[in-house]
Length: 125
Image (cartoon, rainbow, N blue to C red):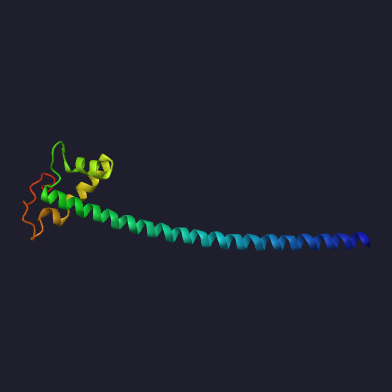
């Protein structure tokens, strides 16, 4: 009989430990989910900042193209100018210039600008 009661106690103890273990797992999963949601929110915020910065980069590049103010001694193209001024890779600078060239601001300079109209071959594409 003493053996049976020890066995029962041992079983009850392991059942309690099992419940405890499951509870910890659930809490841990809840904490992990909350952390994941926090990271996802911060990633979305960072992407929003990058999107705004990229849009501004395209706007400024379109202005450079429209006014041709990127031209200078040794500067071969607007892409070359962007690479030198911003540290963008040549491929990324080309992508930015391509998008900028497709914007309406590149096709027609601002009305308030006394500068030359966009005659760059990049704008004529």
